[in-house]
Length: 216
Image 1 (tube, one colour):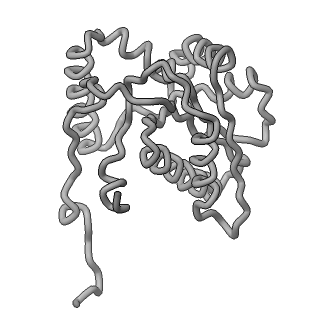
Image 2 (image 1 turned 180 degrees about the vertical axis):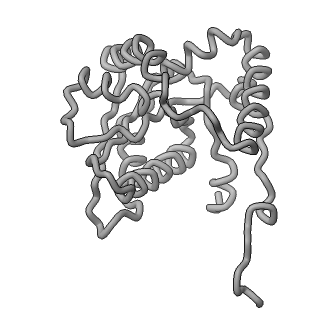
């Protein structure tokens, strides 16, 4: 698949088969991640792969602490156009979940459990006030998502990990000098799930782009 097609075909997966992806394939995806651009090749990242009992404990930790941590987390007062797009996609996802026989409460619970994926990967970087390490690790995470899609795996980047990071760091004994950028659900997609196949859209490039001094 050409790179442009791969980028457009990648999507967030929210229904997974209960089969474990191989360690070899996940390692290949992390290998792709570590070749992302980053500040002066400092490679500030780290990865934690969770499965089985360890993943269950992290899921339980998120379920226990999410509502408390969500208070004042900065997800309120979104720009008007962003709020509009968020509401549109959440309405679409709700309809898709309904088609899969999942009610809103069940869907929310699944979101707090990496959508019941058999594997989760946490992306960490050294804690710094400036954004350079966060930007580099975000690029690594995107590489991971694309590499996983190219290998037939489904992924979903979940912000609940960053929201509950202090609790997860305590649970997993992650040092204070590390920050959790986010976590990715990983597994084999359920092919006929409405949650994995609904139509998505993007704002046209011409509405988002300003050309300055580009007269050719």
